[in-house]
Length: 220
Ligand code: GAR
Image (cartoon, rainbow, N blue to C red; front, side, top):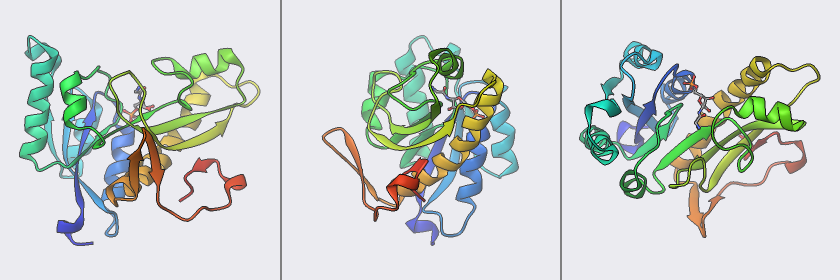
């Protein structure tokens, strides 16, 4: 796919950046409809910054503490993203609440990955809470971002089983592996113009696969 036809993507991170790595790998494929052009970190020591640098992708650090107000910090992020020509923004382990102005500015152009099957378990400690609730299926969600934390039209979800004897770490690792499949898949759909938000639902234009066999919905 020609560079002009690919959507320019900015990724927001705060830490490890393993989802960023999955997006970078997808973006390196010639037929992928998006390319990562900028990584913005809220933390100067985020491991994801080195991943971006290794992939030759530009980075910016925009720490909240450099600004008096959250709105000013977010405006600096928007300025950096727009300077880089970003059309779509992916949050990948970005652990800071965004201002209403930022969320409104990027409405339907801002997606997030969350480690639970939303609307179950928004917020932190999702794996411990899933274990405590005794759910038998857990997973992850990619969704368009709205102001309320971990809410917004759902683009896709991947489910994993909760196994007898699971620890929080074992379950987290299983979910993370699912995130690494789901997030590039959903970015492909969104960047390819195959997802429309209608009445606060994400409608996906693709032929239905065998719905009963899916643990990743929509299926690849
Ligand atoms: C991922 O599990 C992501 O879903 C989660 O943080 C982790 C980041 O890992 N995000 C949230 O909890 C946001 N609500 P990574 O930095 O290795 O991609």
